[in-house]
Image (tube, rainbow, N blue to C red):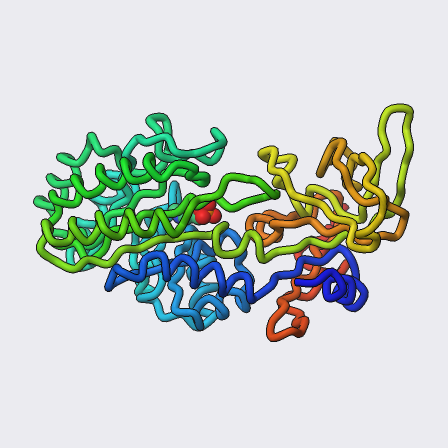
Length: 402
Ligand SMILES: *Cc1c(COP(=O)(O)O)cnc(C)c1O
């Protein structure tokens, strides 16, 4: 997207505002699917939690994507966006058995990640095929909070418990139609991933009725120039070849599934905020913007780096700034960052704002959540209105006994 289009959107819809470039979502989807073009049955299930706006879901549906969901509400959003239940996989962790039953009753594929529920579900519904989430105990994540395959992780059923899964299958006569891993959110190393895949292939041989193997996600995207990113093309080539060889051994053409969130939408997103104040202290120049971690929590939550550009003055002399939000506690987007000279009223553009930004936004400090705009066919389309004060109070009850 061009800076002039972003500025026009800031002008038309006000700041702060999230903007998503549909072209980038499409090109990322196509990049991933073409990396696996040699696999006859490829299924990409977009991870809704990254960005759950129903218009974005519809865009992905039109590309042929399925959905990966982690709550019954995400399942319902998918159905609302026009997905068929069979195009949705439900991969929750720590939810109630009732929620799993509700999703299953809607017709979506359920992925179970603990032995207790596997046994209970299998006993009650032996005719409904289930996918199991396996923990291969491979550490592939960059940040301790987002690595989910290691030994202490709450996710998945340990590979050491495969005999127990098999006993449950035998006793309940249930059918396991898929196995799944999701080893963490930042796969740097193709070799580490392929190592985890080997464990999954070995595991798969224990199950006779598989239709698919789901390799989860964890594709790394660049946050700034020079960042390491997953080489999708090389990864596709190597995993495809290995997968096809495995299918021969297994004796069936299985579906190879992925569930990328960040990879599909992170770079498509731009978050625009206006500079309220430039404040020079004895040690730092602060640029205070009209937003905070209530709208973009990733830097404060897990130290994510979002590139920030001053699109109002792109040619300006680079100076060092700390970009801070308006929340009344530490609320730092960037410390000592070189940005083109900032004046009050300028529009700053936060990059990589497609994934885990709006979906993690809150009303903290009683602030309103901003609008979302989809840039599609060279036009800006409003896909979520900004909240109003009414939204903030509509579920509150002013007691008259007080
Ligand atoms: C969050 C999540 C994903 C998506 O991860 P990204 O890093 O955004 O690609 C995929 N699968 C499961 C089960 C998840 O919980």
